[in-house]
Length: 284
Image (tube, rainbow, N blue to C red; front, side, top):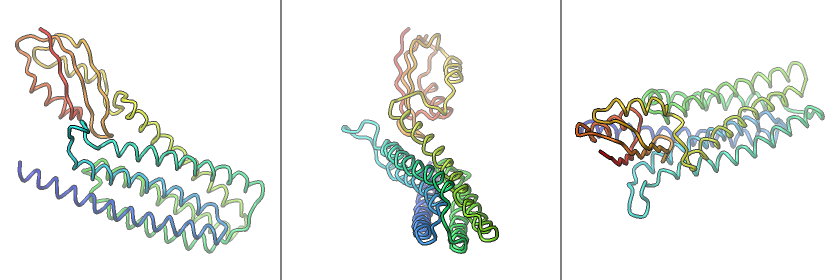
C-alpha cells in the first residue's frame, strides 16, 4: 500500500510539472501569435491564438484539479475544494465563447472586405507555434496513457498541432496565390472549433454545478450492478451527482435482507463507477 501511494504521489507530481510546463509554452505561443496578428494583419494567427487559449484554459483547470485534490474536506467545506476546477472551467468557457464569436464575425466581415496580410510572417509564426506544440506533445505523451486529465490535455495539443499546420499552409497559399481571403477562411474554421469546445465545456460545467446525474455513468448499468449485490431486494431511491469532473457522490435507499453487505456494495460503487461519497439508507 505504501509503495502504491508513493508511486501515485510521484506520478501526480510528474503530471503537475508537465502541465505547468505545457501551460507556460502555451502562454508564450499565444502571446507571440497575438503580436504576429497585430503586425501581419492576419486573423488566422489571432484565431489560432484563441484556439491555443482554449487549451491553456483546459490546462489551467487540470492544474487546479491536481492542486485542490490534495486539500481535504473540513467542517466548512464538506466535499473539499474540488469544485474550484468547475468554476474555473465555466469562467474560461464564457471568455472563450465571447472571443470565438468576435473572431467568427470578424472573419465573415473580412471575407467581404479583404485585408492585406503578410504571408511570410504567418508562416514564420505558424512554424514557431508548430515547434512549441510539438515540444508540449512530447512532454505530455509519457503521462497521457495513465491519467485522464493528461490524456485530455495531450489530445488538445494534437489539435493545436493540426491548426498550426493549417495556419502555415494558409500562409503558403496566400504567398503563392495572393488570395488574402484564405486567411479569413482559416480563421472561420478555427473559430468554429473554439465555439464547439467552449460550448461543450460550459454545458459540462453547468451540469456539475446543477448536480445533474454524472454523464460518464450509465444509470441502467448502475442499477443492475446494485441489484446484483447480495441481500438487496429493491432500490426505492437513487440519486447521484458529480462533485468534480472525476469524483461522484451517490445516495441510495434500499430494501434489504440479512445477507446484505454494505462494505461490498461500497467497494463496487467506488471501483466500478468512481463514487467517492456514498450514502446508504436501508429498510428490512
